[in-house]
Image (cartoon, rainbow, N blue to C red; front, side):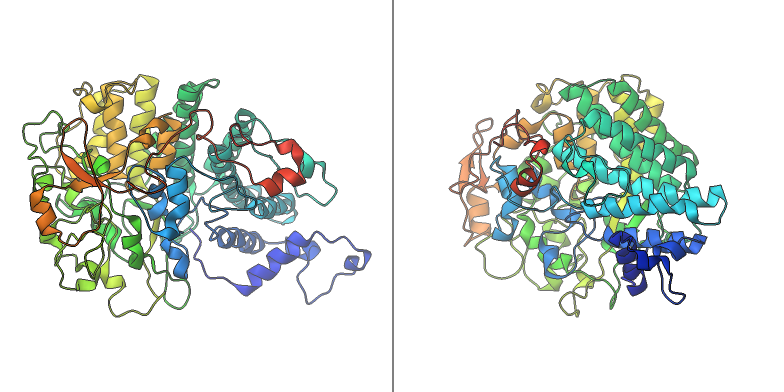
Length: 591
């Protein structure tokens, strides 16, 4: 992926190309200035222009495809880490995360203008289309030109797919517009038609992008393997959406997803990061500054002092902590759900939760004995976990501190907004999960498919292999899917926690009703009341077990979350956009 230096000359070029001026005086081209008529000549010109697209994609709020961490104070919400706040994985209560809480509780407001990750970013599409309208002018070979066309079309297809996933029908535009263009006031294109165009863009990219740009993943540009990984991700979403929500030919999309993932698995240089240490390998490479050369990392964003930095490590307390629901999804070490395993020790004490569990649990949630190891909260010397209300240090609403991406070394001794925590945007592990799910949804998965995908991830943490006929976890018996698909979905939740997938996964599976369950935290018995003296919490009794747990949102506006099946799978369009173009029409349920 492109390095994120904000280069002044690039910005000037983009401003010029987007201006669209056609005044007569421009026919007399200045010899010492860049103009649209003189720019598009060489491969370097196309490369420089496409560099500008990567720079525009730094705007994660409006172009949330290569999602990383926002710079500066906005790191508190503008990181892909925190997208799980829309779901049953996290329980934030900080006012700065109110938008996440609103969506999570089914109380999203119709915005008047743009909102986080919303109906915006269309200047990005315009910039892409300007390039696509001009690349042919360069005096270069067709194969060379197609590399940059493929790069631009991958970004365009990815952007549109994200908008379809969020809003449904979209206003598809594939050429440069001016103020008189009829597309400015056109109706939205139906999602299936738009996704056909997305697939055309993805197929062009996966055909014409090079396997290697020669940048050594330091980080570099999007290559063909990245394009295939993106294609697998987007096609899996579309295939499962059509399967569970209704739509034509979901099998085609699932086959495309499986084939794209399999190409990466069979022929790419990427692999699962595994040094043979199941107690550290899962989170080790997610807690360092430089992941160049890591075999699992396919696309990442570098942050570098003096160029582009963040402060995301300082906001782990804003997550609210992981939920009981998430923690309970980790299997026992015998490979069985805790509802079925005799090895599960229960949750009478905080430490019991970690006993005989998938090693990824202890590499995701902070165990008290690991506080010093991780130098938690800048090695402040306090005992952890800490619950809200206790004085000093990081506290959580749930009691479950997140350790998966935590890197104290990127904070200790550093000034505000000088952290360099990278953003891992595409990794090989996700490709394996996408392949297994697509094959399972097609009903044609084999044990060999599981062994070359999910079981490689389990091998990393020395967990028993997933077999074709796992027992059904009673908690998911009413989901309407096979026990194998239940376990594949569990694997995604565990492996991809805090990587921005859970919300879209629940939507495409049509499992939004899971968001109606209250967000609970740790067991609140006499021992924990004494251990966490001073905690300011509310509690509720689990109706299934009769045990009492922290109830994060009890007594707040988010206490009784709802999910409207006829509305909440899509987001509302802003009122400003509807006023400017009434043909867009609002999504159902938001009028």
